Length: 288
Image 1: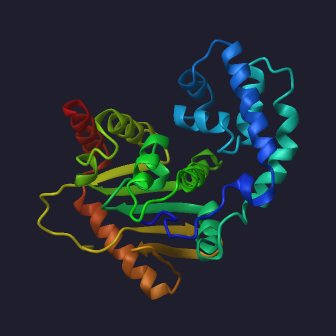
Image 2: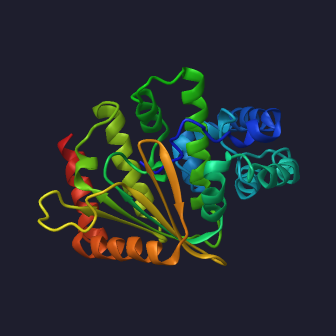
């Protein structure tokens, strides 16, 4: 699973630059204003184009509230400029957050943050950018050797923070090839997994995202190996990232990247198209 999963975990933005108080306070303010307005997390999320998990994470201070969201929420929640006033501080915190990852992951994180294309192949668990908060907790709680609750909380927070890539404008082109087994493995239990499949449908409906499923019964497969991320940076060209048993590797050598890109292209051709994949996800959801 190519998701900053090694033992040296990236810090959350707040941990990295000492701005814990800012995000915690903003989260509390957002919650109070939302409840005063009589909105649920889901309802607010729909109004500002965020999922309920993201709103929950922001209210708990473990995910940065983007300046654009603060601008919208200030008006929607009749905050009277309280949220808008925090925008300069948040922008400064986001600049500092670019260095929150440890050395082994920082190079990839920097490329991902400015990528114009992001492509993912997953064969064991849902990629981090697609995970709900509950699913992420379930994944980390199943790790061996066991992780402490504090470590799990921190890793989930970092995973959620990476999902801010969907909030960028202009948005990157994002695609996924997911092995069908991921739709059949109810990590965390059926109720939790239903929400995870619903999140796939939600993210897959974004204009810049395509999700394709690789059927288990396919007789051909060009990548009987580990999962990987493939990205195109606006200035530095293509790069790939993979992890195997906790050992991360950022691949920038053009010929190696070309081979991975070639395999990914073949997988996309063999997988169900996005509409067929959506229908299959809906079918799996109904069967749960």
